[in-house]
Amino acid sequence: MDYPHPPDADPLSAITRPFRGAIFDCDGTLADTMELHYRAWVETLAPAGVSFSDQLFYDLGGVPTAQIVRILNQRFGHALDVDATAAAKEARYEALLPLAPPVARVVALVREYRGRCRVAVASGGIRRLVEKTIAGLGLDGCFDAVCTAEDVEHGKPSPDLFLLAARRLGIPPEECVVFEDSDLGLEAARRAGMQGVDIRPWLPRSGA
Image 1: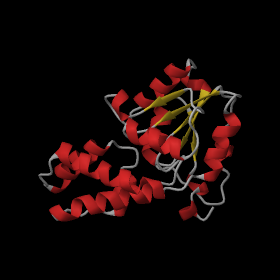
Image 2: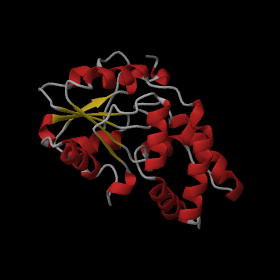
Image 3: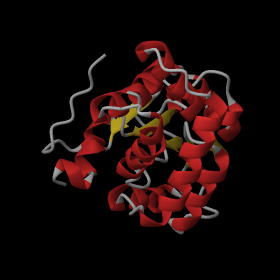
């Protein structure tokens, strides 16, 4: 399913019914980290002579790191060591992480919703880096639950991560709204029966 995101759209207009739970993706949603992730991928794969187009990278937004390595191997016939490549990419990204700016409109929403409803993070990233990103944004203590790739077997577009977040919040899925920056994440929200807000118009590269 294609999720258009015209830059003049108001993302919050996608919320059409009341909600008691707000679930936020992390990379590309709370912090504008996607370009750093892509840089880490390029620098990690270059010594092996492996290219990774930016279009494929953004198409795979929300997919866990190890699974992306598997996809590259399957689609292009590479023989990358999955665990070693994923670990090297995450280490490179962690070194770049201090450069990541917040997505100001989304961080402001977290602070606005905190205390008014239950709030969670549901990210396809690994817990150590997700928690480091949250801390770097000054959002420690703002979330009632933090769910990451290690908590589920199937990543986005499977609804598992968002359904887990709803369970940990103690709120039915249909009473939750998800904030995402990728088509796979928005599809996962749809499959979970949740409202989905596409925050991409708020990203600097969208001209917001």
